[in-house]
Length: 178
Image 1 (cartoon, rainbow, N blue to C red):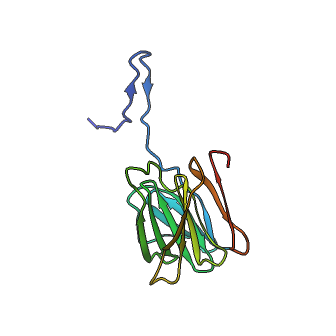
Image 2: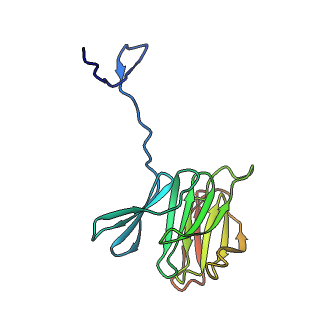
Image 3: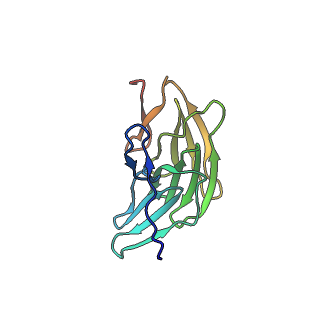
């Protein structure tokens, strides 16, 4: 006799109907263009670099401890900021060299950073943690992410961040409608 592998089904006890298995699929994260031909995409706890012209996909040589929920990229400095679901942030370059890892998790932080954005010059980055906004300066790869200031004023988690085109101001939005 030949054994064949059949999919395993569970049975709903009330309706006696077989239910196909469910698969946990990663479905978070965003897409970012690093150049007109290179796209960056999170895939679980890794970042994929897709060359759209050569049709080549490579995985950057670092990983987060948990699924990546957000990435942002500065075309000026070529830095990539990776935010994971466990409130950790990685600053790396487009080749995948990691310059700094930050851990924002604590008893008081129930959510991961929601937003992050680079200034137009690439010399500053904003990272929102719950209802606070952290401003960091990036002097060089040797001195990445020096904390400049923490802004507060929102009563709910920050959901959007944006620098003005000249980089002198930033605006933030929150789920508290401010």
